[in-house]
Image (cartoon, rainbow, N blue to C red; front, side, top):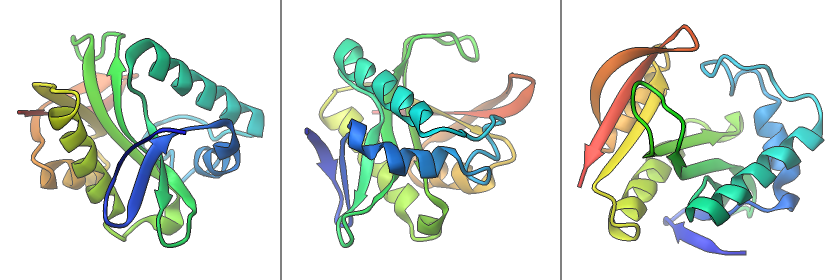
Length: 172
C-alpha cells in the first residue's frame, strides 16, 4: 500500500479494505458525525463501500482521503487528506478540499492540526496546487480553529443541505 506522507507521530497512507473496522468505528459514531448532519453507519459493509469509493478517487483523480495511522501504536485513528471535489458546492466545482475525521479517543491530541498541515503541505509541494479549500459547519468551532491554525482563511458562510457552513481557502 502506498504511503503518501507522514508527520512525526502519524503515517498517512492509502485506505485499504482491511481498514474497514476502523472506518466503521469512525462512521458509526454519532459524535463524529454531529456536524455532518448524517446518520451513523449501521453495517460494516457500508465502510467497505466508502473505502471502495475513495479507492476509485485515487484511480480517477490521483488523490483521495488517506488512512491515518498512529506511529506509536500502529492503530488506525481516522482519515485525512485532500480530495478533488467535482460536484458544485457553494458555486465552486473541481477544487481540492482538505479534510480530516478522527475517532474520538484521539481527539484533543493535536492530531487534526498536524494532519491538516501535512495535507496542505502535500497539496502545495507535491501536487503543486495553487489553491486548497475546506468547509466546516459554522457550529464546529474546533474544526474551524484547526483550519485557521493552518493558514486557511474564512471566506464566507453558505448553506449546504440547509445547514450553515463556513468556506475556507489557502493559496500557495
